[in-house]
Image (cartoon, rainbow, N blue to C red; front, top):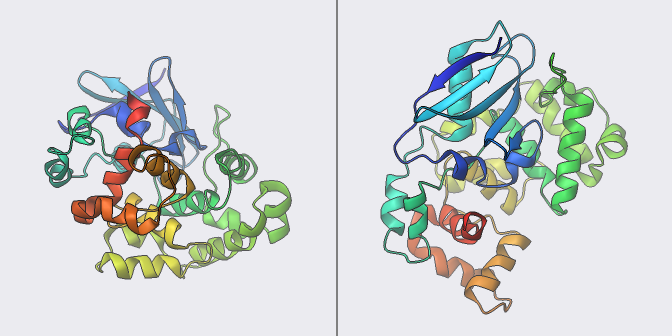
Length: 293
């Protein structure tokens, strides 16, 4: 018999716009269902001693988490779901900044703006590196391989995202041959070993007492993390100062704001400068509006 856990949500929260906010919902161990809109994820330690699948859906004006595992720390599960869905994020200032913008007014009306993230910054770090210099299809392939080949298995057949210890135990050649990680292979080994040894703590980035520019420098000390990756990670820890420009964002900007003509990054930056510390979220919402049309 499935167990359930109810969670209240803030008034400015949209389940649909959050879980479909960017491609993370397509990366294992996340799975999204469009029949009855649900988001599932395979959680593991420290929420439970063994991996288990939890399914999140809308119910009674809030959210319902359905799971079948018996020994689950409910408080930790609730906290993890709130983290994933950004339920504690305060977007009031962002909504104020964009309400008079004709192209962004939809965000506040739709209660959008929260960006789905993983339960740990470590997972988001690895996944972000999987998005660099490659197609989305390859990103999905690498992430799926990591989960299937290194993740612990749940009773229902799902697999959790691998721990740093599991990743650290494998050599470069494994990542090249089995994960198809290419040049990222030694980065994965180095990052995992540093995290497992306590020499690198990505989770500390969530509440780091430093400026965004200094935090970005810290992130870029990690091999495989350049400007784009760092600014993407910054968004996932709640800092939106950077645009995190990649080929897709640039292309969408050219189409929407520059008559499909290529322009400099400086022009893109100038376009969003008025949004200040929120410009990274502004450009993302601007470029993804058609996803929800």
